[in-house]
Image 1 (cartoon, one colour):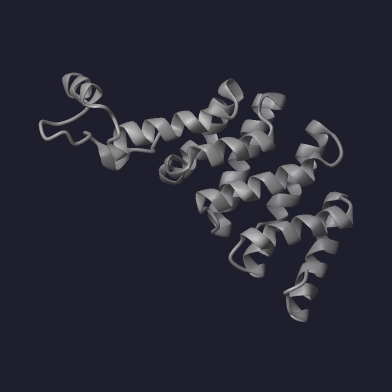
Image 2 (spheres, rainbow, N blue to C red):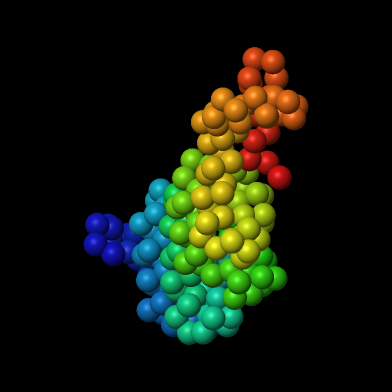
Length: 194
């Protein structure tokens, strides 16, 4: 917790004690989660704002994957949200809730480390994907294709939105009605939605 002023350290300490008691988690693990989240969130207050959802997720992931999995899983999720630039506490919490629902349905076919790597592989394609897509559809893709799901999202983004498709591919896309006569993707403003 170096770099934090005494008031911020006190807030994190109080929140850590409260969450450890509420969810029956190790205080050390909760403190690690708060510290790790604090590194990726824009402020200590934002990290505290998502801490209850993170503690719930930590408990669920520990139950599914074994002790310690929750701590690393929440860390991976927080790093994924940092990559996607989803750091508003309300937005982050909604995406985490959706991710945990997907996790409960998909089980061990979706692990948090693979979610992080796939998110990293998605690059800009992940950033333009809607919150709904990235927290519901994307986890399903990961459960089927692993880390390469991110590469697929990036490839679709680059081919269709950025326009890195070959001339032959662009011609075929126009023939299929995906592009207008000027070569612009039809409905491009909806790219990234479900």
